[in-house]
Length: 161
Image 1: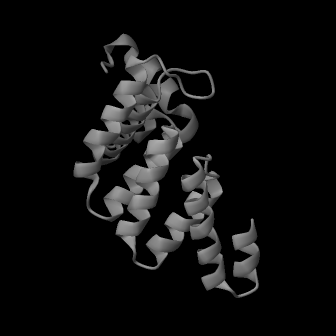
Image 2 (image 1 turned 45 degrees about the horizontal axis):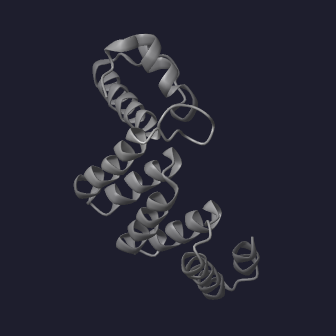
Image 3 (image 1 turned 120 degrees about the vertical axis):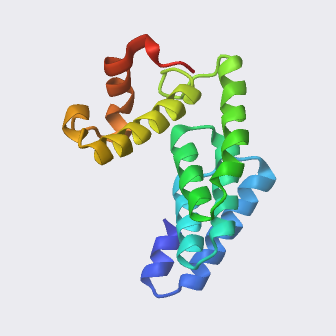
């Protein structure tokens, strides 16, 4: 990525400008945005203490992509900025609308809404398990790969959406 090369050449200001311009151009042309650019810009903003700007980048990307990755990144940025309680309802509403229209995640699985809710449930179960010493009972789950499998195996149809 060009921004990485500029960073390596000790030209971080140009790297930031290049990514900002690239994202503006993509938005103006209605083109899809490369996740690496979004990640770079949001991480750069957050590293510079610009958490509100990082949140805006993540929110815009989530609205364009509707993926679990974009949802998780939005959640992390909103929590860092102290605004997850305000960001969560519209994000879930967008995913509910997708599910209602029959949209599936791009890997052929179910709706991203199910993935997002399962991810949140597994995170909550991990926290509860940690506090009550139940981590061994939940297994060594990898959140990005095992969350759905563990939830379905443990709770089956009892998990309501």
